[in-house]
Image 1: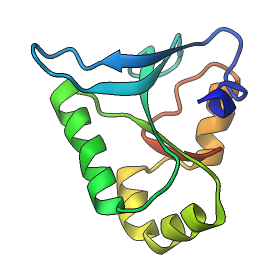
Image 2 (image 1 turned 120 degrees about the vertical axis):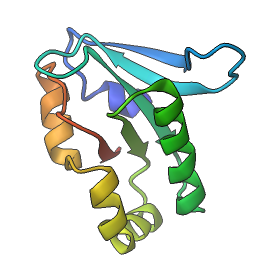
Image 3 (image 1 turned 90 degrees about the vertical axis):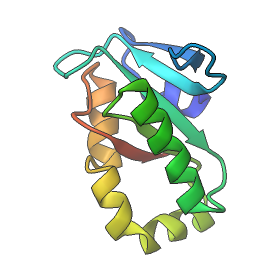
Length: 124
């Protein structure tokens, strides 16, 4: 999360371990970027993955959180290792549907304090 923080405009804040607002739900977002402009919402949740080991399961978990929190846009932040990059490259057809905004475009938006415009997968 600290590597993502380097890409955030100074007007944005980052809250960590933000609970999903459902009664009795113990799940939480790894983080939430707050203070975004020019988007559908002033905040966007973040899920972080150090290692992509079971992509189907990891994506399902993010999708279920999104559904249950009634959130449409999520940032999936992934460590930029060679293995993770290969997994993402091999799954590009599936991932491009779930995360239509490129990582570069999302980071560029975050650097100026703007909402990325949709879900994105970002390597850090």
